[in-house]
Length: 286
Image (cartoon, rainbow, N blue to C red; front, side, top):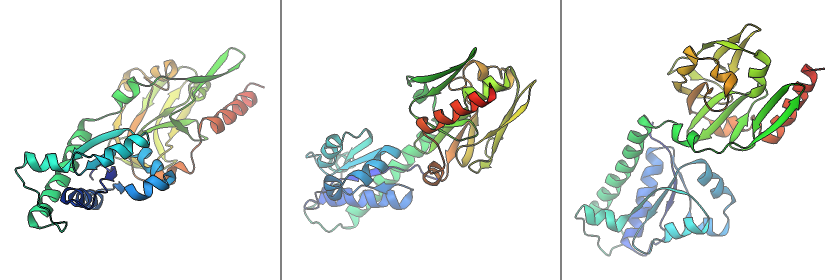
């Protein structure tokens, strides 16, 4: 399956290059799970489109050197993942753009070729991409709750939680999943890690491997649905990494998401999960 974009095309439909930009955007949307951001409506009503643009990598398709789509993205404070200009792409391919606003065979072929390349490039990158770079750049801001000698940390931003004390960090159509400080503190010294199989499909709240200490076996309950594309192999030989650092080194698995829009409705943000954590800690340590 091709990666998905939030696609912001040029709105200059009075020029051939603008019409081709629109055609490329339509083709990318048709050939992947990408969503279009209408540049006209985006200027006057941006709530819906901001949501899409923040969930998917942003692809900006400018028609010419005016770069109206890029300027709109800048006005909205959006981070551009990939950007092309039709006029420049045509020049690289020795295609002369006519003045007609009706796309002919040459213009349609150009649009199709560019759309295919955009999706193929993204697909090739995706094979090698993990969340390592993203995680290495995160500045973790923890809220701490203390009880007796125990300290429980919860990241303030970027993480989703379920009531089973598991977390998910989502980037595009990928998520990294792990367990919270509450789990590792409750289990004490973790001695075994039973990973999920790479390639297995997991439903939201389905089992995603297990960890074990002398006290108990804890089944990891997946906060999200998707296909397991990677597991933390280091935990097989060093399960104690979960005790040391459950949010960084002690992550469990990475999933390719299948329905995050629906999954998110049943997930908790920091504020809600932190209240649940405090209640659990207080009840456990009474």
